[in-house]
Structures are given as C-alpha cells and as structure tokens.
Image (cartoon, rainbow, N blue to C red):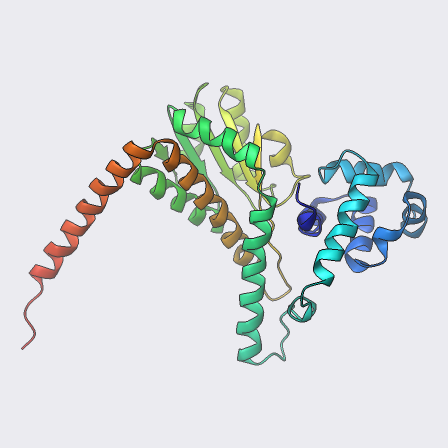
Length: 297
C-alpha cells in the first residue's frame, strides 16, 4: 500500500466503524501532525481504548502491525507537509462561499478523489481481476443510484471490446441474472459505502452460485469488501455540501477506466478490431442522421 493514501483509507472506513474505532480514526484525522508521533499506549490513553483496538485498526487498514501503520501515517504527513495545503485546509464548501471559491474547491476535491484512488489501487489485484474479466463466460455489473451510472459506463466499455457484459437497471433483473451465474462468471459490484442492501443481495447470490465477486468500494471494513474475492478500493473525499455520489462517482470511474484499458491490453488485437467495428457503426449512424437533416435556407 502506498504511504500517501492512508488518510484516504481511514476516511473511507469511518462511516461504518463501531464507536471505539470511530473515535480512534477521528483522533488521527483531527491530529495529522501530532498523532503519528504517539506510541500505541499514548494513543490508547488519548482515545480511551485498549491497545488491541489500535492493532485491530492497523490490520483493517491493510497493515501487518501498528508500527507499520504508524510509519505510514508519519510518511503521509511528511509528504503532505511539502505540498501546498491551502486548498486542502479550506476545501469544505460553506454557504458563504462565492462561485469562484466553489469552483476552485470542487476542482480540488475532484482531483484529489481521482489521485487518491489511483494511489489506492492494488496492482496485483487489478492484474488478477483483469485475467478473470477477459476469461469470464458472463460478466454481471451492478450498482444502485450513482453507482448504477458507473456500472453502465463499464458495461458500455466492455461491450465495445466484445466482452459478454450485462448491467441490469433494477434489482429484480439483477437478482434473476445473479441466480443464473456459475463458476467462471464474474460479478462486479459497485457500492461507495459497501453496505447498499440491493448490491449485497446480488453479491450473496453470486457467491452461492460459485461466481467470482469483485467489489469496488470506498470502505475497507464494509460487508461488501468482506464478501468479495477481490476488492478495488476508491478513495473519495466528500464534504458537507457534496453528496456521496459526487466524489465517489469520479473515483469509481477511475477504477472503471483502469479495468477497461487493462482488459483491452490483454486482448489487444481483438479489442482494436472490435473498437473499429463499433466506431464505424456509430459513425455510419451519425452520417445518416446528418444527411437526413433539411438544408438550411
């Protein structure tokens, strides 16, 4: 794991954490400079938890020990302290911001979501999932709300390179398709929180059918992350004025583009031919539409 993404990891875990772990993570996020300097016993005393709670948090965040977790936090602060923190420090959008400030802050937050997600992607997982993707008999892609928009985008991209993808738009169809999955198929489940009930229902059925499950989520401690065979984590950062769908959508689309390009690389000749055929088909339609328009007097 990159040392520069540990803060994003903690933010992503925060919504679903129990009280004690939530208190510890909040302490680290509120004290990014001083908290990494504290020993495990000092942090435990400051947050009124047992040292074992901190060891548990470190492992949930993807580290083998509290020492590795603490080192990552210190490195993260060192990296950020060498960069301008003006935008980060004032990135929460308030009711008093003028439009110029709103635009600047949105640009910063969107850029940070994409960059942090790129740093969070485990390349070994991406390579393994890509192998399963290009070899799958059937690919079911599912998400709800804004995550459905992202699922549809991946569906369209995979169809362009002739991969057998499906992206149902409502839960009954998704459950029906999940029930017909079998070993060798792949479910790609999108949920920013990792706790969307409809997505979890589909994932449970897919697992029962012996189908591989890839989760794309922001929360490492979520039920969806625990249920999946593989997880590609996003690192979207939201503020009080931005619904979760804003940064999460951009972060998920970053993962989508990585999956698509990786799959196209592995099937380069077939993908190039498919892209040419589909491009020509669409261009033909555009030419026909243009020819049908009446001339401007």
